[in-house]
Structure formats: structure tokens, C-alpha cells
Image (cartoon, rainbow, N blue to C red; front, side):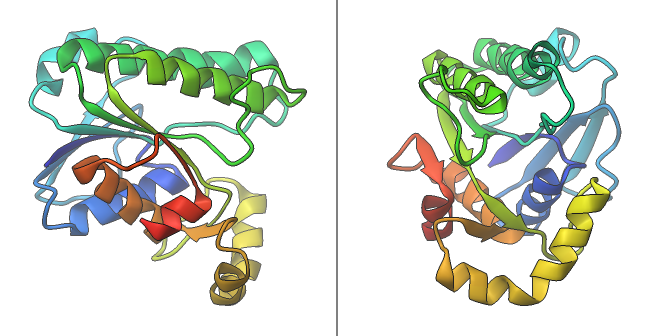
Length: 218
């Protein structure tokens, strides 16, 4: 299996990249981002692009891949709805449409979040925008799956870019095994999420929208 990965430097993307590189079923990983993935591995190739909204100049290099793991995202804190929508909806759909043109039916895994509003009418701005993004992806000629993790414990030196989150994760790390047993519908880890993404990229899943409990089960 050959995999395209966007968001390889974020916490979720780091976990997905690690599991792709460890999995014998993954032959190649193409990381696309504004900066290199920061990892050297025989399976991995980086394409650095300042403008991720336009992948047409590299469309020829995207052919032959089986799946895309879209782990790119930002926090909505302090952002207007317009600015958040541009990064969350516009960028995601721009990439997805390019891939649908390159290879219709490509498996596309989008990391959304618990609480996403599929109705697109709720009061939470981020949830509406995420819901709109999910709904639009599911209408494209792609084999698309929505991942909705809740609390993600980073493992194996995976780190959040946010200082506050890093402090929270440091405190929660010793409690992770207990939290996972008590709340399997809420708590997962970067390793579990990454492994689930590799599994769904390879084999699909019985549901299009996967909550934390589904991710843990996979």
C-alpha cells in the first residue's frame, strides 16, 4: 500500500506517520506539507509546498497512491469562522478534489473530532464547520472515512505543538491505562489512532464515521 499523508508534523500526523513506517503493509509514504516531516526513513518522501491549496502542479506525483491520511488541522480558539473555515473546509476540500480527479475512488481518511455537527446548524462554530467538511467529503467520488477521536494521549515521543496541551498530556500520561479502561468511548492514543488509520486505509471499515470507541475497536 502506498499512502499520502498531510499534517505529518502535527500530533495526530506524527502518530500516523510512525505507524505507517512501522507497518510492513505500507510500502511508501508521501508526506506533503509546508515543512518537511522531520523524519528520515527509506519508505518516506517529502514534498514541501508553500501553497497547499493548489496541488495541481504535483498532480502527476500523486498518481499510484492507494490512500490519503488527512491529519492537517488547526484549533478554532481565537479564530473567526471565516478564517477557520478556510483552513478546515476550503483546504481539505481542495486537496480531496485534486485526489478525486487523480484517482477516483481513492480511500480518503479525514481526522475530524468528537462532537462534530453533521447537521451543520449547531451553536458551536468549529463543530458546524467540521460537519460541513465531513458532509462534503462524503459526496465526493472518494472512498472516504471520518475519524472522530476525542482525547488523544500522545505516545512514543509524539508531541503536540501547543504548550498547554503538552503540559496536560504530561500529567495524563501515567493515568492513560486507567482512563482508557474507564472511558473507551472518549480516550485513545496516538498509537491506537495511527494503527486504526493504517488498518482502514488498507481494508476500509463498516462505518463511514468512526468515533473513539470504533477507533479503539479497530
